[in-house]
Image (tube, rainbow over the protein chains, first blue to last red):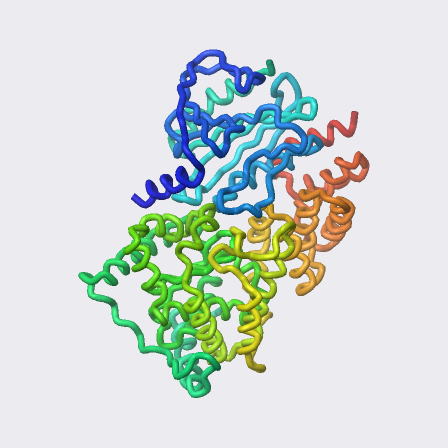
Length: 190
Length: 389
C-alpha cells in the first residue's frame, strides 16, 4: 500500500502520464535514431520529461528504456526535481568524456536518493563508430528494489546519443537484456 | 569499544548520564521554565490511536532494519546509540538509533523511539558535540511528544499515507522538498526542541556552543548556491531549514564549558568518508559540496581523500578556474601516501581533456597498476591505446 501511495505521489508531483503503444519492427526515435524492435513496447510521455522518450514493457515502476537523442552542447539532460528549484541542472557539454557523461546520468538517477554503483564502463562500437557501454546497479530509494542497468552512448558531431535500459536485477533484467543489446548495437542515425 | 559488549556499554552510558542529567536539572537553561525530563513513557494501549501509530511505526522500523539503505556498521551503531543514551538518560532503553545512507541533512525520531540519522548529516558534523546537538533536538521532540502530534495531525488531515510515503522508512528523498513544509513541526515546537537539546547536551557534558555552529555551517553551505540566500528551499535541508534566528538563539543560550569530542567523532567517521563523499559528489550540487569540502579540509588538513573529492567536484563543475585548481588538488592527492586509486584516474582524465598526453598516460598507467580490476579498466586501456597512435 505504501509503495503504491509513493508511486501515486510521484505521478502527482511529476505531472500526468500518457501511454502509447510502440509496434515491433523499425522505429525512429525523435526523427533521428533508428532502432529495430523484436517486440512491442509502451511509450510514456510525461509532462516533466518530454524530452526523454521513455518506453517500458512491464510498467513504469518495473522496467524502462530511455533514449537521449541529439542532446546538444549546453542542453539540460534532465529537468530539476519538483520542489527543488535551486537544484543545479544536469547540463551536457560536448567535450565531456564517457566518465563525465556517466557521472551526469548517475546524478540524474540518484537525485531521489537511490544508490548507484558503476559496474563496468567499456568501449564499444555504437551508431557506426566509437562509443561506450556502461553497466550499473541501482538500489531504488522508494522500495529498496535492486535494479540492473545498461547504457550505450556516443557523441556525434557534438551531440549526445544514448540508450539506457534498467529493470529489476532478478527476473526482468536478464529476460530482456539480450534483446536490448541487439537493439542498441544495431541502432543507427537517420 | 574493544572488550566491552554493546549492552554493557549502553548500561554504563545510561548510568553515567542519569547521574549527570539529575545534576543538570537543577540548572535549567533560559527559556525552558521549570521543564524537567519526563519519566519514561509507558507503551500505549494497542486499542488507542497512539497504540495504532506505534504499531505502524514498529512496522516501519522492521522495514528499516531490512532496508539496503541502513548502514550496517556495528561500531558506528553502538557509537550513535551511546550518544543517544548519554542524552536521553532514563529514556535510553526506549531510543534506537539507525544510521541511514542518504546524502541529505536529516534526522528524525518517531514516537516509538525509532531515530534515523542520515549519512549527509553525519558528514556535516565536525565533532560529537555537534551531533549531540542534533540528536538532543530530536530527543527533545520525542520527550515533548511532538512527533506524535505531527502524526496525529497528518491522520486527521487524511494525509497519513502521503506522510508515510515521504517520511516513513528512509523517505522518498525527491519529494522531501515539496512536502516538508506541509508536515513540518511548528516553529514553537522547533524552538522548544532546540532548547531541550541544549539542556540535554549540557547535562551530558557537551560544549553547548557547538549547537549554533551546526546551523552556521549549514547557512554557509546554502548561501554557496548561486541565486539563493536561504536554505529553506533546498532538498538538502528540507526537513531542517537553517535560519539565522535559530543559529543566533542557540548561540545566545549556550554556556562555556563541556567537551566537543572531535577526535572520538573523527575516529568513527574517517572510515566512512570515501562512501559518504562519493554520495555527496554524486548529488551534483557542486557549489554546496565545494563549501563542505573546503570546510573539511580547513578542519582536518590536506588529507589525500579530501583533496581527491574536492578535485573531482572541481573537475566535474568545470567553471572559471575549476580545472586548474582541480589539477592542483588531484596532483596533491596522488602525491600523498595511501591516496585513492581514483585520484590517478581523475588526474588522467583532466590531462587528457587538456591534451597533455604524456601526463595523462602516466596517470592512467598508475591507476591501472593500483586498480587492475576496476570496472572502467577497459575504457582506460582504450585511452592508452589512442595515445600510442
